[in-house]
Each structure stands twice: as structure tokens, then as C-alpha cells.
Amino acid sequence: GPIVQFTKAKGHSLSDGLDDVQRAEMKAYMELVNNMLLTAELYVQWCDDATAAEVCSSSGLSLKYIWFVSGLLQVYFRFTSGLLQVYEDVSQCCQALSQRLGTQPYFFNKQPTELDALVFGHLFTILTTRLTSSELAERIKSYSNLLSFCKRIEQSYFYDKTEPTWTYSS
Image 1: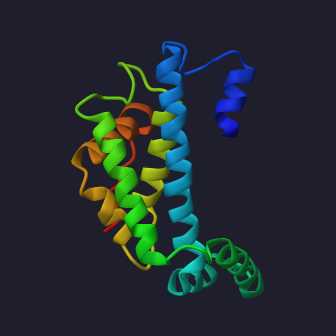
Image 2: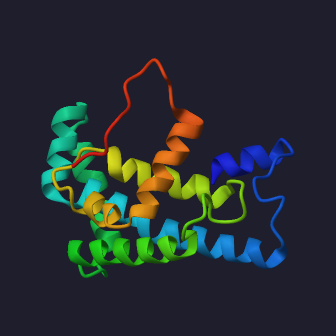
Image 3: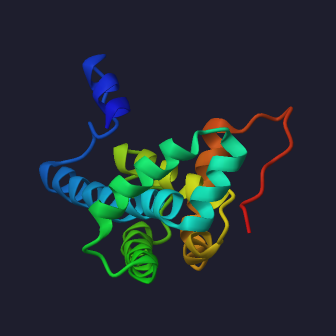
């Protein structure tokens, strides 16, 4: 993504300590996350009528804009089986991520990589964004190590001791 490219352009890489096999595995998991979690986020936020209406009313976005974006994404998603398939895809993705993470603090070694950043970004967004349905968040919550991972990343890198801690949406 853009953040990884930016840091790489500055001469930094979170995956410097990985060998070629680990890098290939990391890229495969990143593709899985982009194909499953990002797709689920887009589908739920734009193709679910109740959520799209909520976004429109609470954000001040034009109904025409919401309708246009929703229409484009519905064309994109017309070959899927719908919302239930999206939820199942999220469960399968989380199962794979949970198995890879195991009891480790990060997906590879003892330091975070681009995969950790990507997974945290998507899981944190799904867990903390209020939607008309909590089904996506509930699917993630069934994987305690992924929840612990998100809390650990948030507390290690984003926690502000002057602010009250957030809670995952329910």
C-alpha cells in the first residue's frame, strides 16, 4: 500500500529481517487480507442498504454520491453470493491469520512487519467502526489471539495515556 511504499522510498522496511520464503509468505497473507477483509469492509459499508443509508445521513454525503458508489460496488460484487458469503470469507481469513499468528506477538519473528500493520489497520477498523450490523466484528471477536494482537498494537503504538481507552464496537 501507499504507506509501505512511502517508508520503502525513505529507505525503511519492516520486513528487512525476513528471508525470501518469509517475504513470499507475508505477501501471500497480505493478498488474503486485501482480498477478504478490504472487500468485506467495502461491501458492508456501501452495498448493505441499511449501512449506506446510515453513512449518508450521518456524514452529510449526498444521497446521489452514496447511490453512485453503492451502484458501482454492487456491479463489482454481483458475482458473489452476497452478504453471507462476505461474512464467511471474513471468518476464513481470520482463521488463517489466527493460525499463522498463534501465540506470537507478531506474524513473523519478534518485530512487526507490513503484514502486522495491514492486519491491524483492517481489524481495528472493523472492530471500532459502528455499523448497522455487528456481524463482521463478531466474526473477528471469536479469535481471541487476533483481538489480543489488535489491543497490543494499539497500546504499543497508538495509546495516549491522557485519553480514555476505546472499546471495540458491539
